[in-house]
Image 1 (cartoon, rainbow, N blue to C red):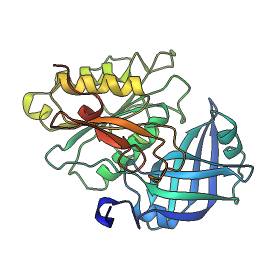
Image 2: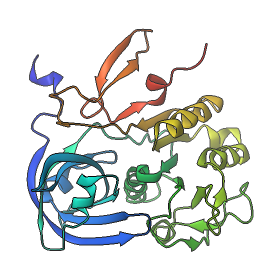
Image 3: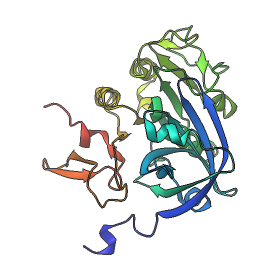
Image 4: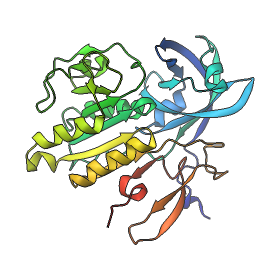
Amino acid sequence: MNANSRPHRNTIFVEEAEVLEHQAYDGKQFIMKLQAPKTAKDALPGSFVHLRCSEQRPMRRPLSIMRTDKQKGWIEILYRVFGEGTELLSQNPVGSHINLIGPIGKPFELNPERPRPLLLGGGVGIPPMVFIADEARKLKGAYHPMIFMGSETPFPFKTRPSQIMIPGLPDDTIAAMPLMEDWDIPSRLASQQDFPGVYQGYITDLARAWLNILDDTQRNEVEVFACGPHPMLEAVAKVAQEFELPCQISLEEFMACAVGGCAGCVVKVHNDDGTTAMKRVCVDGPVFPAEAIFPKSS
């Protein structure tokens, strides 16, 4: 195997990252800002880091990058406490250091021929969607993203009634992510937990409602991007197929090495020629075309 078949080589770094901020939110959720200049410089939407939660727990955890500042050299991650590893991670104070490997993974790619990205994030799948929205806004009007986020635990931010109208959605669906409001990017939230101002249902319902109010020209400018639990991604893939839209999805998988060596995160991928192959989510993904994971029904 030659170097050209391993595009991730020489692009992944090991850093001792300083914890700059560490904020707790309801539902055992945390947003951590880390000084990691090498990772920040090369990270793209969909990239993740593999970090050591604690010296007491050497096994690393893969966490998506939510935002970066390439000039200041920081990255931001959102995570939820699931077990002992993330519980130990949550105990790292500001000023401590965390060993991480990053940035890892094949990223999402914006397409200038599809200037209306529809961003769908569920739970801890929200961070890559924030990253794409940030990249899109930096391109000064080249893209016009729409972002829908879903969660069955409290959202890791204080929601705000949106000042940006979105035709086609229920009038009482007004809760938005403040950061998106500040960026002038329309956003709405969905849940089945009866949160105020939040749509009672799935983000795919919001996606269909929005897509249905677009005319053919506008709809042909849409590409779907999604990250979240497997059932959500399957539902998103069906929506994309229904409206004949291209769709990129980011998979969530357990990982051991996260750099392609152990093959512990392989998934079956359907190729265009009808064949299948086993691909590593860490370096062949985590982003894949939706139809490669959820092929169209014959």
